[in-house]
Structures are given as C-alpha cells and as structure tokens.
Image (cartoon, rainbow, N blue to C red; front, side, top):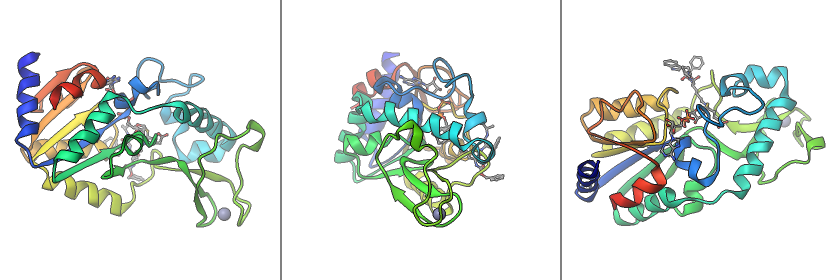
Amino acid sequence: MDDRIETAKQMIRNSGSIAVLTGAGISSDSGIPTFRGEGGLWRNFSPQQLATPQAFQRDPKLVWEWYNWRREVISKAKPNAAHHTLRKMEETKDNFWIITQNIDGLHTKAGNKKVIEFHGNIWREKCSMCDFRRYNEVVYDPQDIPPRCPICGGFLRPDVVWFGEMVPQEVLEKAISIVELSDTFLIIGTSGVVYPAAYLAELAITRRKNTIEINREMTPFSELVTVSILGRAAELLPKLV
Ligand code: BJW
Ligand code: ZN
C-alpha cells in the first residue's frame, strides 16, 4: 500500500492540471451518512425511493422531511482532513477543479473556489411550478414543511438533481471539459454507480489520464484506474501532498 501512496503522490506532484470527482464517502468522516451501505438508509427508504420527481409528487412532505433531516446534519458538519487537503492542492496548482456529487457544500466551506456542484446544493430551493429560486440556509420547523413558493404558492423543492432528471447541460459540459483538460484525475469516495457522474470517471480512464482512486471499498473503477488505494479519504489524502 505504501508504494501506491508514493506513486499517487508523485503523480500529483508532477501534475499541472488536476480534476477531482468526489462522492458521499469524502464527507462521511464529517458525520454525513453515505447513500449506499452502512447507515445509508433513512427510515428504511433507499435514495431511489426518495430522490425522484415521482416521490416528490406523491409525498412532498416525506421527501422534505428527509432533506430537512439532512439539512440539520449538514448544518452541524465541518470539512474534514480530506476536504482541507483538496483546498491546499487548489492553492498549489494552476489548474485544479473539484466536481462533487455532494450537495453538502463542504468543499466550498473548506475554502475551495473551483467547485462544480454536479447534483446541486441542499440549501438552494426552486419552485416546482414557476421559475422562482432562492438560497435559504435554514432547517425548517416541521410544521412549515413542505415550504411554499412566495410567488405562486406551489411547493418549493430542493434544487438538486434527482433520478430521471438531467444534470443541467452547462454543468455537464463544463465538467466534461475539465476532465478533458486535466492530466490527473482523482476519484474519491464514490460508489461509481450513478450516471452521468460515473461517466466522467470512465472518460478519464478511456482518455488515459493518470487516475487515482481512494475508497474504503472496491468499486467498478478499482481495476481500471492507474492507482487504487483502499482506505478512508480523511486519512489517506493528507498523505498524498
Ligand atoms: C468512503 C468512505 C471514506 C465511504 N473514505 N471512501 C446508465 C446506466 C445505468 C443507469 C443510468 C445510466 N444513465 C442514467 C441512468 C439512470 C440514473 C442512474 O444512474 N441510475 C443508477 C443508480 C443505475 N441516473 C439518472 O437518473 C441521472 N439523470 C439522467 O441520467 O438524466 C438523463 C435522463 C433523464 C430522463 C430520462 C432518461 C435519461 C441523475 C442521477 C442523479 C442522482 N442524484 C442523487 C441525489 C442528489 C441529491 C441528494 O443528495 O439528495 O445523487 S442519488 C445519490 O447518488 C446522490 C449522490 O450524489 C449519488 C452518488 O452517490 P455516491 O456519492 O457515490 O455515494 P454512495 O453512498 O453510493 O457511495 C459512497 C462511497 O464512498 C462508497 O463507495 C464507499 O465505499 C465510500 N466511502 N466512506 C473513502 N471515509
Ligand atoms: Zn412558484
């Protein structure tokens, strides 16, 4: 394992252009549960049962209860050593971008400036009926759920990307160009089963970038990347710089 860390470290040191794809695993050491695996289920619902427009249409209150609970957890969470390491990396590289699937905002909180929030942000809200959008960093009182649009009275929803919805075109295009322009690609704490995020990692692999994966477990990428390191992101990332 130590020689893998050494190889990854050299790749990062010699690289002028780094792109990073992060998933729920990078925030698990900040106390935010992941989606799949241990502790990932909220009231026994899987993300596929809650993170969909159909679930919201059927039961907006239930879906908001889930997001409100996550808002509460996220409001108390602090960036961990993995987030902080990525901030240091950004400071030393001319070209450095994070593409995160997380909606918790912890990369920005850690001080990173070049962050693409691929699946949106939990504090952003948009109306399910009209074009109203707002940033609203509050944990709701249970009786105020689901919140209503101040313009049209429709239900507000979290401005995040659910299953069956498209990642906004400009976000997807920007992410793809970041991958294309990078020479080193890090894949951190993601199960790699959700598309199109997983496609970005596949793209990096097919374009023969230097690819480094950090994950507690094996993923579909583990045998395809240049270096796969098994372990916790908060423990391993600081060793790479
Ligand atoms: C650690 C660790 C530690 C833990 N250190 N590691 C191609 C093939 C098959 C299906 C599809 C396809 N293309 C599209 C689809 C359908 C679908 C999809 O991907 N389904 C699959 C599940 C099969 N995709 C979509 O619907 C997407 N939209 C789309 O395709 O639009 C086009 C279209 C539209 C209409 C019709 C047809 C096509 C949208 C997907 C949006 C996903 N949204 C969510 C919710 C976001 C908001 C929210 O957070 O509530 O995004 S679902 C959920 O999964 C969330 C996450 O960002 C995402 C990924 O999860 P992630 O980050 O990987 O977390 P986990 O929990 O899965 O994994 C954690 C990992 O960390 C594990 O590996 C651990 O081992 C590791 N770990 N602790 C290091 N300390
Ligand atoms: Zn509205």
